[in-house]
Length: 300
Image 1: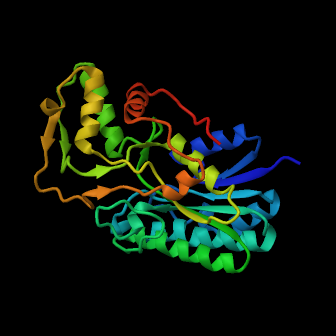
Image 2: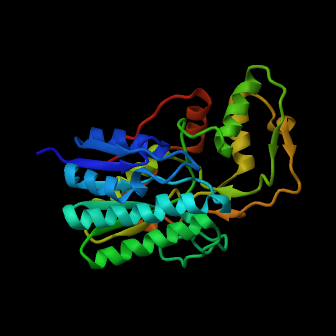
């Protein structure tokens, strides 16, 4: 019988790359789309909907990727409904109907104490935002359900991009502006602290890491990232080098902007020990995003 998987957030960047990987692995894939930001709770936040789906599909894997990717306090309840309530709905439905299913829950590097040093899955948590709070609650739910026999995995994800990234995200915004400038635009990009450092991973590589993690019988939590940080200035330089322009001529500084962090980088030692490493360089990622070239991972 063909194996199957369910992805919550299947319409998002990570969901689309993960679906492609799973189909390539021979799995049948069903999905739950994330409700629009600010909409009434639905999809994975609806216990009856999740219970019915799990009972009907009886998946071998369930990947919970749905979330509002913002740390703003005003989306506290949306994040709680999707991340926390969604996690509980999934874990309980799996416990009842498909206890052999492997469940993956997306975590974030933002939910840890951040001293600027590389962050592993062993770092202490810090509820520094409404988003981090929801992620932390989700992890404790996973740890509780493991005691009940559910195979609940958590992958702590760090910054990753692709041509599928939404235009509101900074890296995509810079890449899109570079495209317009290459075509003759004289616009200036308004940016805050361009010395902020974060990872510039490719989403296709990250979902390959997710797939690697859920193949393990004993490792249930791991930081999935490159372990390499790049500044926003580095990204500007890479993108503008591709169009033959000087980036500094097209940036308008925002001196009063206060970033959430100065550095956010993973320690992916556990994932590396499993044989997973990212394959895509920052230059290749910039090429993808400037050209809109679709790309899928071949790892797995």
